[in-house]
Image (cartoon, rainbow, N blue to C red; front, side):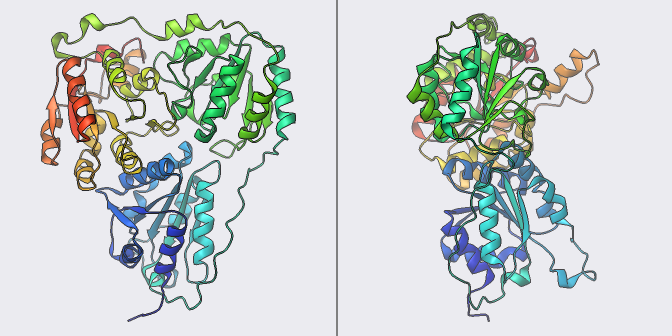
Length: 539
């Protein structure tokens, strides 16, 4: 029996020193040694029912807890299931370190069972890919963690063979400094120079509009708000940074990037004579206006995909730029000409139709829930028509309180992301909006949520269809085909997983139940019937 420190022991040490307190995943015979090292090091293991769900939860947990999220899987099929969370992490800039088992190289080519070229598969969508051995343990873990947490954040992937995990480390080596943060091909300007260039652009603008995107850090929220307020600048946000500014403030124009009423928001962008893309990243934009409208890009890192715009870039540290702008004050004043777009962003109220025929109006539901939920509530949406309406109309007020898969737009994101969010922010209510299609993909993780002690409020928006695709068929004058399914009883499903479930037919009943669950910090699944007509003309 090996009595010395092993490769697995050193991996657990390095992750603990990086601030990792919890690893997500599924077990396999090849990773048992590493799991046991985590146990002995005091790192908790969150067992999920699918590797993709574990990876999504890990990435969200890392994002909200300010460290790297770690997911652990076995080799072969377990590792293959990591493609979804790694791709989502890559496009949405979430810090995810995936570690999977792999067949030792020395066994090739005689051992081909479950052997896949995993590094080759994941390398194009990761910032760092490598293999952990007894000779490179600390270096590989640190480079992987540093790559995940350096802007633009994203995923790293490491393989570890079962044989290597139990190898004894004779001299693990002293702690090494972490690699310096890289800024890709951007050459950062001095903040004073950057501020002067931006002031010069604004000096001649009559209708400026600031668009905040994925590259704007939540740590700069306070300074961003102060700059925008002091200079009286209208502002819009992409879904991934909802809450970076208070969306109930008068200067807020709307959510850009393909949400509900997108035509109105796009018209507002075209109305502007200067669009300032502060951290804006086209990965969140599902149209082409960003290539057609002149944008002045204010960036401190390349886009999520590593690309840098060809022109009109002011590259600088955002925090230093904001300090300079606040200190200097605005170069002039502007009249706000975006009020018409703000009003048009809101479709006519359907409050008088709420509850008729047993269906609820999504917009009324959102406004009433937003009225009673505390500002620190974390709202998570899965992908579907409901994502579009929650993304546009939920009034986020604080940073990191709205979570959505947007760069990849992956169904199945919602429930695992909600679990990761609650584990990271246990004192905040977590409200998940998910369609009955997405719920059926991931509902088994309700048992995971209960077992991990994460109280979630899950609103299942039931229309018995992949309604977003159904509406796309209608807009192209195609017959509805392959998009509708039978009813899935989410109430019974919830109860089978040990979670209270109920069905409501009025907004008042919904609000009452949600408020009670939030106050008692208890789990609840609520099925809400919604008519397909509710989304027409909005998404």
